[in-house]
Length: 272
Image 1 (cartoon, rainbow, N blue to C red):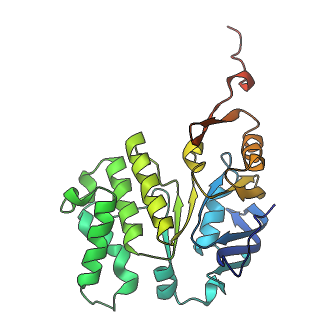
Image 2 (image 1 turned 120 degrees about the horizontal axis):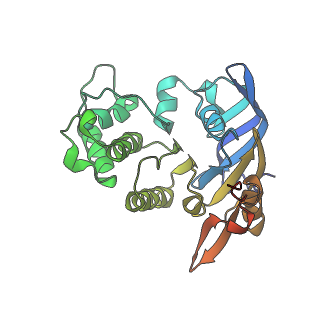
Image 3 (image 1 turned 180 degrees about the vertical axis):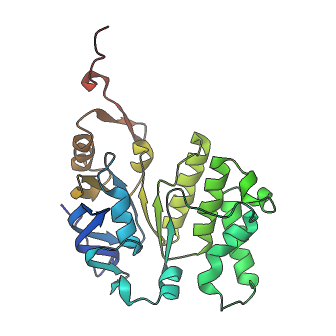
């Protein structure tokens, strides 16, 4: 099930051993074992309720769980909170942020793990924030309150906040929410640039065609990993189709893969 890797030449960024987790008293993850290599983009796929977001939260250390999660080869709980926040950045779903904060202030929050207590931002902080805002094409709104932005604009600002951390590992849960297709393409370019510079990216996506650009796929169903493999492999495509009850098809279009509904497998409408 797990992707074969050489841990000496490509050490692990994140790993999970026998991880279980529950939400509202109901078990959601069941003995998950996973190893994610440094400097790769791994996308977690699966139908609604598969446990994707729960797994990502467990890997981020923001959700109680049993078993062991390791970050950069060390138990995640062994990191001091500030050090862990420097090494691992997190972009969750529907994150609450004060609407009266300016875009610049929101993104500067990503630099808090690097700043001494009550110290003002230094030149490195300002450069990281500007770089992140320009990355996400949000620099022109830097002085606007967050509450004045659309859903898609807000999402780009929250992505900039995560990028401003400049962490070795970046976890993103549904980062394409509210983004139109052109800005989804921009996000993909950002991720590819991060990987080229050695950052490890782990994302949960519903946009399967974009997920098929990742280096590796983790496929989940009913709280378990059913497959972990390289994206271009036929076995990975079959696992994705099986997770969605073979109601999607994956096609090669030029030099990329595209996922489309398999219309022949769709249930018919009830008779009038």
